Amino acid sequence: MLELKPFKSILDLLKAFPTEQICISHLETLRWNGNVISPFDAHSKVYKCAGNKYKCKNSGKYFNVLTGTIFENTKIPLQTWFLAIYLFTTHKKGISSYIMATELNITQKSSWFLLSRIRYAMEHENFLMNFDGTIELDETYVGGKNGNRHKDKKIKGSQGRSGEDKQPVFGMFKDEISEVIYRDNKNNADLKPVSEKIVYEQAIVRMEVVDNVKGETILPFVFNNVEAGSIVVTDEFGVYKNLNKDYQHEVVYHRLRNYVTCDGYTSNRIEGVWNILKKTWGTTYMGRVTEKHLHRYCREVEYRFNTRHLETAERFNVVLTGCGRRLRYVDLKNNL
Image (tube, rainbow, N blue to C red; front, side, top):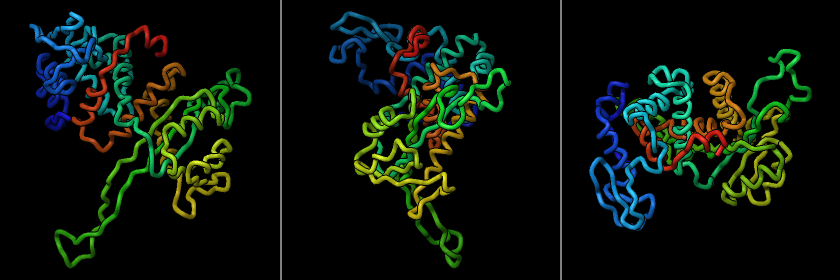
């Protein structure tokens, strides 16, 4: 991945990308790395033209680095886009379209579309590999609490595992692979050894908005994304009872106030991710995320968690390397 100087402020970002041409050159390096590929025919010869344009020999069509990306046909300058990505990736709980519109001096509608396209780019291939090792599985419901509603808006039977007024979300958490070693104190070898954790693989989370939490909905998602023979940790919810056929299934009995098994297995980490999701939904976006677009906000929370160990410039580039798909406004409205 192309390295950038560490960002410490918005000023540093503007110094790194002072002109539109430098922004375009950075995108070309990330996307093509000197080998320009036509979006119309990947095997075609490409001719370089004026104005940062290229021509595909086989199709006869012109294109540039923005063609086929979230930036295609945008009227917003790339420098503004880069500033938006920086602001979005550095706010730990996200940023609303209203605040972004004010910061960038654009309309709220344009701001919402811009943020939606950035979330679209956050569905990065680096986080879509099959899971193995130890995986925590759990489900949650996103929506307001029935007890906080006015009496004429309360929904009967909406407590517990009910989707009457909430949207179920299924999640998988792949535990990190790490080791604690002990080394001599660098300042004084006579002192007791210092413990140090070495992380070989970072933890990764993946979420999926589902219609319900029945076995026929959840289990295929597990079988398609978790390698057979892995260790899966769940609570005592009945839909998981058949997992021991393909996996080492460890159960944490929450109803008995048991949160860690005798072998040290727990589902507390995926529970912590749900806490992040609900705080983002309920504070930054004030509970106004509709069921239609919830999956994009789940991708946002996934991205923030999965890139938490990266420097700001690296997280910035992760979004840019995932921008190679176009999202039209009509597709966004139609929930595609």
